Amino acid sequence: PRDFGPTDNDERHHISLSGIVQLPAGFQLAPIVSYGSARPYDLRSGFDVLARGSGYSRPIIVPNSDPTNYTAISDGVAAFNCLAAATCHQVGYDTVRGDPFFQMDMRIAKNIRVREGWNLQLIFQAFDLTNKTNFGSNFHNTNTSGSFMKPEGFINPSSSFTPRAFAGEFGARFTF
Image 1 (cartoon, rainbow, N blue to C red):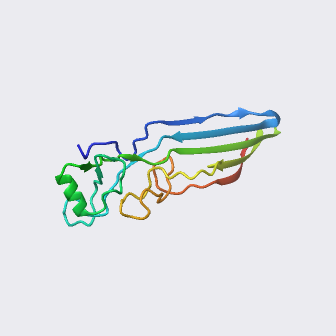
Image 2 (spheres, rainbow, N blue to C red; image 1 turned 60 degrees about the vertical axis):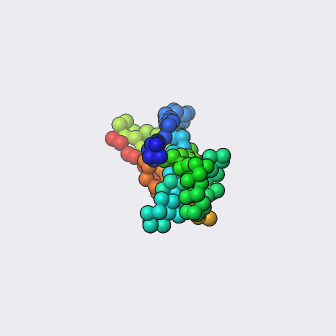
Image 3 (cartoon, rainbow, N blue to C red; image 1 turned 120 degrees about the vertical axis):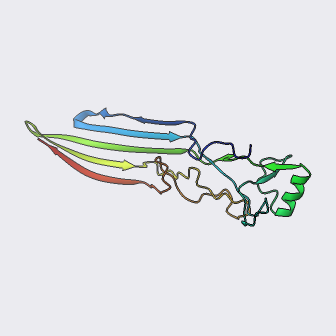
């Protein structure tokens, strides 16, 4: 049962909303809002729980009396003794979840009619308008580390672990 659990990209809820609003004087406003629920990540021990010689193990051992205390058992001897006494157990795969994802992008355009059949559109686009840090499930997962369960990087909606901070761009489109 230890290896059963959600996949790394198990995002239970994801919603994206977008639209175009026509404003007076030839302006257009086009927002895109995306929200995704927190994704799971796996925890691992900073020591060799199963004595395989690897230096660390994937399952974290927790006391039966305190199953969310992921740092209670921090060495191999304590893990071996409590497993033998049946007073602890292995944490399941992808047990904890990171942070939810939120992003808002916006496009503002001004349409200018130059003459019959000629149109100029001036555009400003802003990405990650709220500048929210999205860590997703990218957290340090070794329980003996001082940075255990602290963010290690960023996530964007395509599941690539790359930062995406606020950015904007200007553009123009001429149609005839």
